Length: 298
Image 1: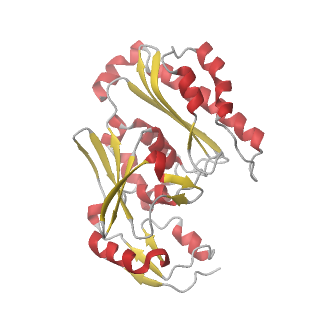
Image 2: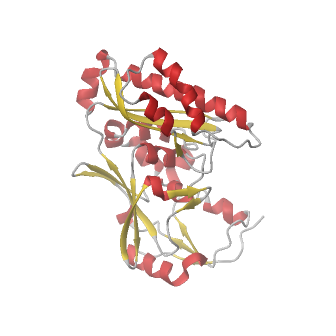
C-alpha cells in the first residue's frame, strides 16, 4: 500500500517548527527518524495534511550533563545513545536497553524522542524513562512545559503532548552513588518489540533496597509501575528468599491482556520471571566486589 498524499516541509529551527504546529495542529505529523511514521503512512493509519521534517534542527540532538541532570535531545539517534560514554556510566539501564531496540540500521535512524512520543506500549525507552524518573520537555509557541514520565504516557500510542507541542528534550536526574539499575525483556527475536519486559531502578545500601521503581512494559496500554512490589521490598535486603517471596505482590498491579503472541496468563508469568531476574541483577551489582567499579563509574 502507498502513503496518502501529504504536504512536506523541512524547517530549519525549532521556532519555525512550532509555528507550523500552531498552523496545522492535528493535521501535522513530525518526521524524526521515520522508523514508525513511514510504516503508519504506508498503511494509511496516519493521513496527515503535512509532514514536518525536523532532521535539520541540530539543536534537538545531543547528550549533555549539567547541574545534576542528563539532557538528551529528542532528535538524538539510538546509535548515539548506544555509543555514549556518559550514558554507559551514568544511565546504564539505557545502555543495556538500547541494544534491544530494533537492529543497527534502525538504531542509526531512530530517535530517542520519536520512540517516546510514539508511546508504543512494548517499546523499551518509554519504560526506562519511567523507571529513571525522566522529565519530558515540550515546547510550543506559548513556551515550554515539563511533564514527568508518570504523566507523559497516557495509553497505547497516546501521550500528554498537545497537537501544537514539540518534544525537545528528555531530562534524567543523575543517579547518586549506590543507585543500581537492571533491565530484562522477552521478545520473539532479538530486535522485535517485547512480548514483556521489566525495568528496575533502586538505591542499594549493602544489600538493602529503597526507592524502588519497578516498571513493566509490553503487557498494559503503557509502561506501568508495579507499586505493590516496590512497597513490599522497600527497606528490605534483596536476597534470593525475599525476592521469591515478593513476586506475588506483582499481581496487585499486573493485569495484562493477551495478544497474538501470548495469552494474558503467559504475559503475567513472563513479568514475574523477568522481575525476579532483574531484581537478582541488582543484588549482584551491589555485591562488595562491585564497589570499586561503582565508585569509578559514579
